[in-house]
Length: 244
Image (tube, rainbow, N blue to C red):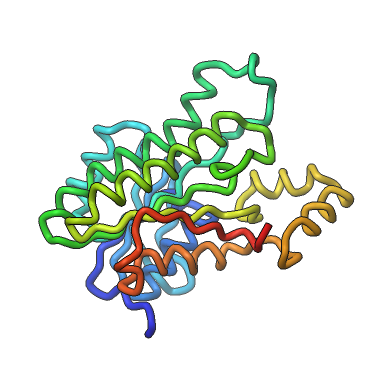
């Protein structure tokens, strides 16, 4: 059965680049009406497809509530915004409160506020799909040694399980995709280069499929969770990492 999102309204965060942008335009390709959101400007067109672009501070509950009120309601929420906020691994005692909050707020806190904002409509109609893009760092450790990132992604996974349990009776599923290492944006490109030839070779040898992930791998898993085919799957975390 082909995945078809005709008639569905989707909200996708992190749509300015990388995985979030690829998910937004894949949903549009498959028929959804998509609102792509980021803290930076979102280019609304790509390969003949168009999405509604919007800039929003996803760390602020009031901003999210206003976004959903004016651009919604939504049948599908994909929270892909997040990342390491330009930080690198440092010793525990050097991490400031601001550094910690920056990562936790855009990853886990935003995931909660977004879910909170879209849930009332989904409950009312008896249908909804929420997918949080977490990370292998939330299931293991951060390759870059960033404590807040590993903690925030583990928090997103916990949130997925809890919301899946709470919202299932309303016809709403909540799942998470946990990507392995994917060269999807300038940050991951810099990380990849920092490993050098030997480090890159060692990373590939630890992956069962002997290749890095592609954006398309993460898109495919996300669209499955957002589709009708996944209606009896909730509270789950799918590692898309090539096998480790």
